[in-house]
Length: 144
Ligand code: HEM
Picture (spheres, rainbow, N blue to C red):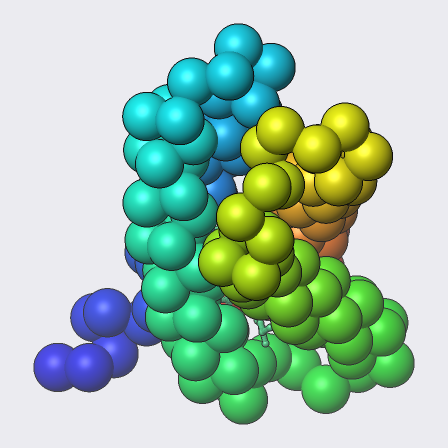
């Protein structure tokens, strides 16, 4: 029964990727155009993206146990895990920072710092997806 749902992980990665990217886009546009409402939409999407990424980490760790333990696969999985954890930390920071600094949106330097953080999140998503693709399409992980 459970076998028909395996691998679980690929079913759970699309929502966090999409929600986080939409969150970054709204937050960045809101910052540039000084629209607090857009920033609020961005934060809401980032929160959902973070929760989705947490679920993706859980299913990824579950699927990983069925992956072949060759040095090549393990090397890519380790990089994939590092990027996944970095994603959780950076999205978490993008949610926490505005709570700590209420003047974030108006203060010049912290605004640019926040934008750099948003760009880092986009870069990490690209790396995470690329490494995941290497696992599946390059090394045949999760393909039965
Ligand atoms: C940090 C813990 C994670 C582990 C241990 C992990 C493990 C894996 C494994 C084993 C695969 C190969 C397919 C499978 O057997 O399921 C995979 C693919 C993939 N992973 Fe992860 N993953 C993790 C986190 C994430 C996160 C946070 C994301 C993005 C939100 C992500 C995105 C992907 C993508 C896009 C693929 C390719 C799926 C496909 O093309 O079918 N992973 N991952």
